Image 1 (cartoon, rainbow, N blue to C red):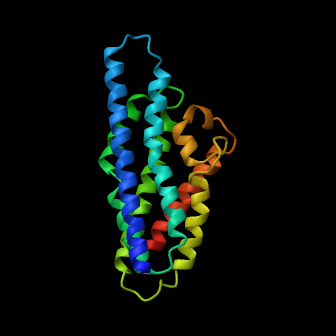
Image 2: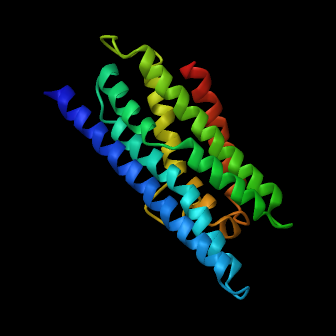
Image 3: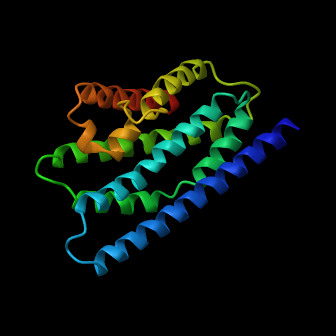
Amino acid sequence: MKKISVLQCGLIIIAAVIASNILQFYIFNQDSNKHLSSTASQPIYESKYNLYNDYASRIQNVYQFLVQLDNVKTPNDSYLLSEGFYIGISSDYYTYLESLIRKTESANYSEELKHIIETNENLQIMIYELKNYFTIHQNDASFPEQWKEIKSLLKETNVLLASGSSKDTTLYNITSYPENFVPKPDYQSTMSDLNENFANLVNLLR
């Protein structure tokens, strides 16, 4: 019964993430079409806001996935959950958004936008390695010895990915509102900690 409940949970995640991506893609295309057909007086910042928020949605999805993963007890259940989650994430969609973000780069934030994109790409690499890790160990009776260290580092990293506050310097808020968060004093340390954690996790998972 436990495997069935986890599988159902994975299917719910697939449906939710796919529906979210389809809706975001539709809304974004609608906004883009309106922008093309509207006058030049349409605020540029509003367009950026929608774009950055759509791109940041993956971070929120990863955050929710890791919260659920923390409650899973067996390698096989973790595998089922990760498979469901990964199928629902469209890498092509986010690559498309990245290409649009690069076109919005301003003189003041060009390098930081590149840094933000690279950090999001490192997050994606880490999730891919996590999926492979669960695939390799899906039939094991228990988790390998290093899983405790991996799980602890995932929880530490998840705190930096998102939170319930729009004021916290998290990757979600940084990606959604770069112009507001890049100037913050803890921006550099947050990004450094995230990328260091991603690198350490990848090394542990491989």
